[in-house]
Length: 209
Ligand code: OGA
Ligand code: MN
Image (tube, rainbow, N blue to C red; front, side, top):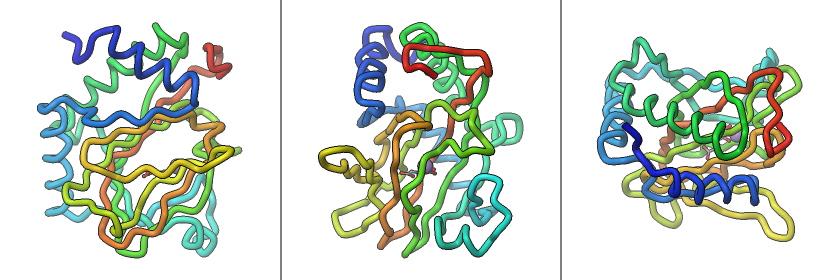
């Protein structure tokens, strides 16, 4: 059973193809959002957050200058509460194939927590050592976010950068290889579910990926 119609997916994915990013408000259906929030709640109890890493960099000092968030990588088998979310990711992958002829082989997702003062300097999500990330996918989980809380996603585009507030259930999809972006310093704790769709080594879709 599909979460969304083909027409709905076409509308979103056309935007992604044209602009290289798409912001979608109220993206997760209720039961999917509930599943993600359950996993986040569990993590707020378990506190298994790890300091985030940058690519395969081993120089910890440099990493601290680039990003200061904490992550918890989801495991589809261990984090069974997230199953409805992974079902939706499966539908997204199928639609990327059908609509954009993009063949994605897998995915990886983590919860991210930016403490007060947390940031992520401008970067691409594809690094030299890890070039299999095709599409980045973020869902924000900040129920009471307000102006002044910071932590906006800034997408660097000409002529003007685009600033995206990390509002509850707002999703952003963007190309991992071309879209320069950053997370502005947070003035309040900021949560998201962030992940990447990974490409089939031999694929070539309409995005040229
Ligand atoms: C990332 C990232 C953006 C965001 O984790 O690579 O850029 O808005 N996240 O959380
Ligand atoms: Mn990023």
